[in-house]
Length: 132
Image 1 (cartoon, rainbow, N blue to C red):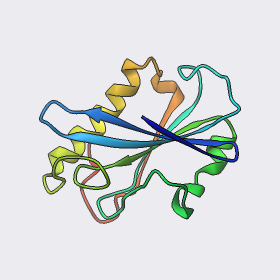
Image 2 (image 1 turned 180 degrees about the horizontal axis):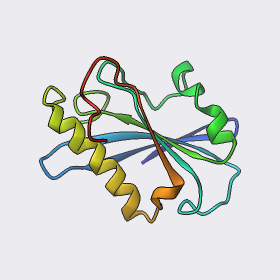
Image 3 (image 1 turned 30 degrees about the horizontal axis):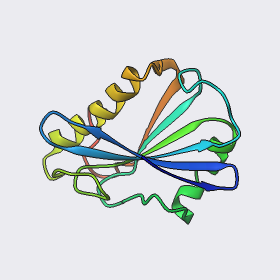
């Protein structure tokens, strides 16, 4: 896990392993000044769609989510299989669904309650996020 800080925003890179060999990259933004237990914080999980990749370095695209991190939420930016440092293929819609399920299951294993999580997805004109 790599960590960088931009003002009060801490950015770290995590990976979720999926049974079929896929590896899902998460870029997690959080408030570096917050000492709240991660299990009690609010979380936003964002799936940007197939044509977009998040990088760990601070950039304009992640800054759209600064408001949430500054408010004390953790923002999980997900790269589907085949994008960023994620491993696997996204051409199969079921792989995208499996990736989404793996990410949410990983949060549950960390003790993050579903009431504290919101899933956002950008899937215009595709079926890639059906089932999430």
